[in-house]
Length: 185
Image (cartoon, rainbow, N blue to C red; front, top):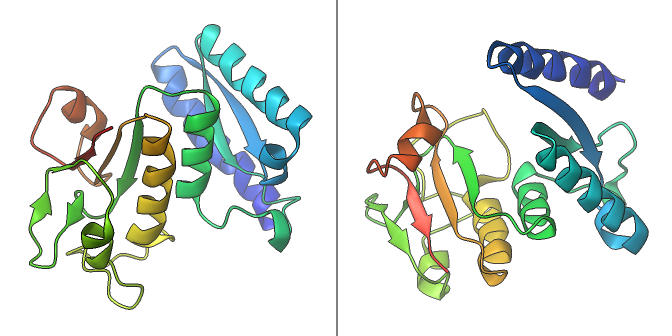
């Protein structure tokens, strides 16, 4: 029940912001089952593309009200990756607490051209070496983000990890400010 109540509140917040921008939004709730069933996958893709074509910003979220463990994404990173591949997005931006990906010496890596064993070795489920910030704002961690990025870069879609705590982070990314980590294809 809390998921259904929370969805209303979340969409209300998004609607309030987008109304100030004189923009329309839509809500698209998905489960893993929507990607495993050909008809539902095509329907989801058509809905997303039709929204975009009509200048409506789709707000995509997991359909927690009907998800059961077998069809849950488990985190929004995986959902974002799957949706990006589905609509052949130009770019995937994952916002997080850390401002990108950090190596074992806590230096931000600006560009990564391949997710190889060396890059993956910097991430630990026990201690997330890719983050110099601890946060309870999200789930999934850097491993989850890198799995989503591997999915999209394999589909020739570039990706970025940056901090959602930076004001105007997306605008700054498009202004080529020195923030985040870019994953090249």
